[in-house]
Image (cartoon, rainbow over all chains, first blue to last red; front, side, top):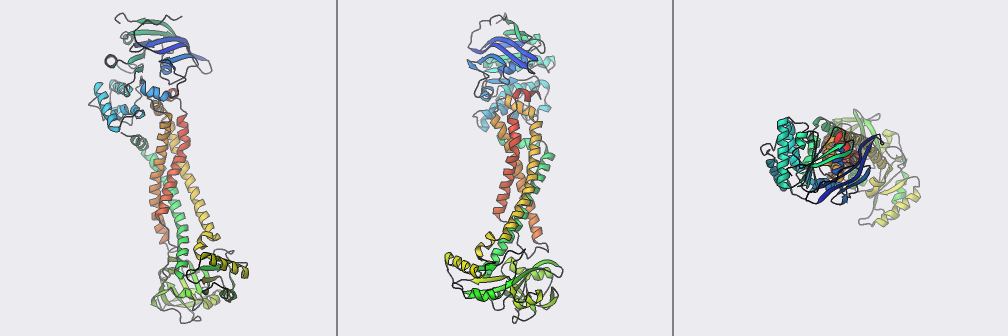
Length: 236
Length: 371
């Protein structure tokens, strides 16, 4: 059984009840009846060994995949039954991936503007916001560079800027430091924390790096597709 | 950056493949321009010829091959007796190989008939009478045959003197060899035979009157057909066959173009599965992904169309000035043909992109991201 979610001020934004996900016609059970609540403004780190289902959970939260069973709500609305999942991903969610997932034929500034096509911004507004975001992650001098011309840490900064392009209320980060050296990893977590504090976004971060998880306000540990512990950091 | 920038960037990332696809589609469109341009040019040339000659109704028996079957020249007298007829003349026209030239129009015209009136003598003269064994050449025919006044031309087994060079005021006329009807009948062994009766009706005759005349002619010449000159091109079986052949050949070329673009777009979608996954993850709607693929294929079509029309136009000009065609037909390079060809290319692009676009819209974002 999972311990009840710690009481943290803020609106309940994610609620998972008995969430299950099967692959290969049930041969692989990624999630086995997971229960979870996440509130607005939290910085939640989800930790666990490879294959415990943490990335699968993140994909469910981001509406990139559908659960096989169970309830999964975002602000009271069922995520799998959303009428417009693209709008949810475009305006409520910002994704940050382990392998950056930048588009190689577009410049840094263009990559950051790509999610904005689903908004109502004009061409100049998109450009202005892209520059602003890249400056906020310390890449104002790299606007016209291509991803291949950047270091791993810089690419992840671009990915973070892209994740914030439509001013989402939640950032879902899947092993954002997994492909980085330790120095870059610290810088990226510093940046995420700074943006989390400044913008008040809810940050859900999947990692297997305990030093990263220690900086979160709440740590959820998963094993075999279930939550086995859920702790709020003492400092929070 | 605009949406168009994204579309364009996709095409420029693999320039060689994009260029090869453009070559494929442009060859198809060039074939459309060249073949249809020739067919339309031929139709236009004949239409203009009839117009210049002042013919209102043409009587012939088109059940033959390229040219109408011959029939007895007595029909001309019978037709001339019909009401609503102002003037009648007859002709025996054949397409024959003359000396080194491949095929030329040889027109034996009744001496004194109105068909001679529109020929403007540029040098020399017209035949003295209907029995003179002489020819006059349209100026393009003279150019193709490399003949001037005073030379001779061999038609079938007869050696005939060139007595004049004329301006026929229409491409087909200018590429024709003219001679008196009787001489033509002798040269081709068709004594007493003709294959055209050309009729002028009184000026300002209503169409209904002309249609009645056509019906009257059908009664006295049931095996043939009388056609209003302006409708000859539209209704003639020969022109229909030429049109159908040019379009069907073009269609084959277009199908090759469709397959080329479809192959490229499918490759593009397969190659970019991961990229499409990223676009879906950052919130792009599937409809936007579909639009992106369709815009790309439409742009390929448009560019291929522009290149194809240019190639086709150059090809048509070269064909039009080649010895076998010069003077025989004037290729049609009208804006209408160019616009239709480019529109076909864009439609080809869009149609070719439909399946790849559908494939891209069925991608699951999580699966696409893992590819």
